[in-house]
Length: 261
Image 1: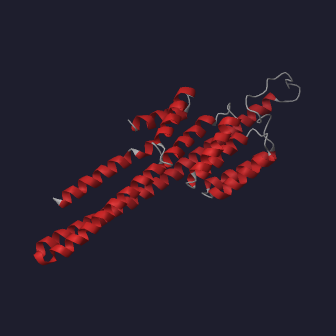
Image 2: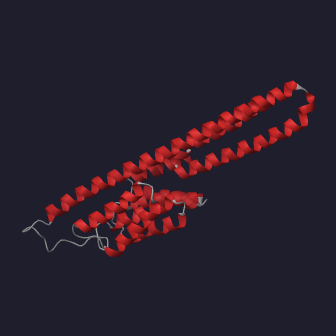
Image 3: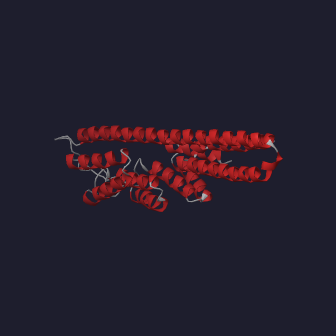
């Protein structure tokens, strides 16, 4: 009976872990930590049973040995799932960085075409963002790519320092909103959720017309969840869906909201 109860408990834990990806990889790590605590508690109970039943015969000890073997197998499964999550995080990070680079190149091409000699429109309306105007210079692009490379390699503190230096030197760059996004995302990966929220909020408030705003809000929701503030996270997700219904972030927000019902 004890073995059956053990498998039922841990099976339910894995079932909940499988849905954690809809909210955030950080939440999945919390689930794994909870499972590890459950296993630790069960191991302690096994040790107590072993001490109290040692005198009751070989049969009971044999059952305890089998139970400990099962626990060892489950610990192995946790290691496998942890590795899978880390691999998925890296794959998603690489894909997003690649997408960011591709979109930036397309924006640069469009910007150059619009500002070609003889075709400059002096009556062009100002952007709704306070800073990002004009095309991206070679120096800006080089500095931004270097910082993004640090993020992609997992050097999050280095990425924070480089992107902060970028916005300090190029405050009016088209890439300034993206720089703030990656600063926030780097803090998120360092589990410094408050700093992540602060930088994403800078993006949202200072560059309300940026295409990075929905993604920044999604990252804010993940940070709020990481801080244990589920109600604020839910509110942020609803704001994404209502304000940016056609964005990819809205689709992810809908999935996260559905997983919390």
